[in-house]
Length: 400
Image (tube, rainbow, N blue to C red):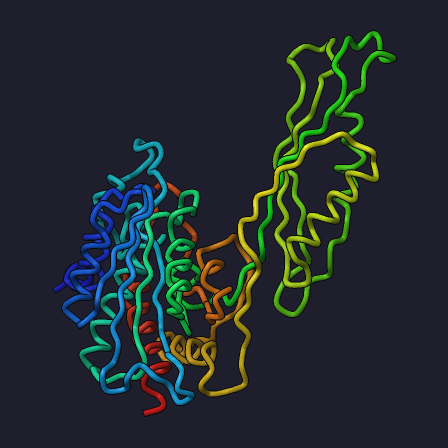
């Protein structure tokens, strides 16, 4: 039997293909969560579907009767796998070598939308959990799943709403693995143990429209805005710390003008974003930005969007620490050490971490995510199953 035929028959590849064949373009779930819930129910999980507006979410939980769901400190020990079933649109179908929702294996790579982001991870989580519950039915604590169909969209009715529901009934998560594609070259070579905060703004700076030939009758908002925008772009917000680089300010769009060369516009609109470290708070950023705008005596309106606060899961000097358990799981499978990182964009981990949970992101390589011909290595998915399995063992069996 060829290696390709063996890959096709593996449990994780079969499940990944089943999930990928469902065109769950955000915020659609397309039956993915039911497929997962049915597998989990057979393991003794209780499933709760939480539907908010256009978004379907799954909260699934298995409590160990033998351990009574308690750790040595007599607190609920809850291990959570978190992720999303929604995917971004496929884009131009003519650019795909294979149909995006017909998963195909070529030379050991599984192609299709969601292969890496993140249906491959979801499949690996399920298969690892099945193996773990079979091997350790009397494990400590609880195993949970928090799955949404709103991660790739506006993230309004997804994980954040589920967390609000869980918080309202005092249902906590202790440790969480988000299955986002964190790896760079090989599976597990990078683990995200935190993320920068993200805050965006749209500022509308007002002037007075008029003919360019009569500058005494106009107030050019472009001229007025440039010194302030320049100062914002050159401000050193902080120096970062051991976990985060310095805060970054980036202008993403500037729009003004009527389309005519002889008209001074009446206003200019600028969009910008700051990715910030734990050295700052969103309130400090708002105050500092508006202070600069005010210093330049601008007439402006500003609309802020708070995308998420920074979070970090620190390395505890203990053999029982979460990061140590994850790192050891990766090392035992891949034989190579992992690197901790907080780089990249945001994830739904930003909604889970503020509850007090220790959150990391661990998934396959991210080189092709959101691209045409998205793909994941079948070997990487097999290893990801083993890594997730050992994470469960390390966290839920080590005190027995």
